[in-house]
Image: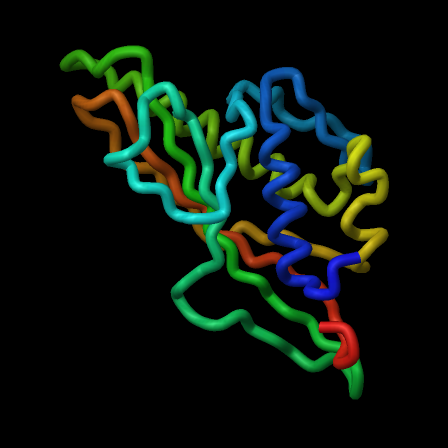
Length: 180
């Protein structure tokens, strides 16, 4: 196991979001179905800011996972050896529609809202997600993990074919002094 739990969580989240594609089904403990995934990221999930000026339209949609720059992660002591930390994560999503909007509809708005909803489902599922490379869910490796959606934003639609969204999550996890 990677010793740094914070980095481990970020890498696992990136792995989960890379699977986002139509037909993907995530399993939740209650076994209830989630909305049908319609966005296809084509594994384009990055852990750093990419310059939009250097991004080709063929590279969209894509997602960036960034730790929040709005302040430090909150840490709360639970007992003499156990802490709960809230890892602040911002997920930026970028989409491009097939054509520009006409004067009546913004084509990109539906794609932004679809990607927003799909990303929320995937982030909520990531504590329980497994695949051939990751046979154990994150909760089995690190203990309780709780992603909480704190805010969401989609760029207002306009007469342009692309747009972006921002989802801000706090991912609560536990650690002890000897293995932070």
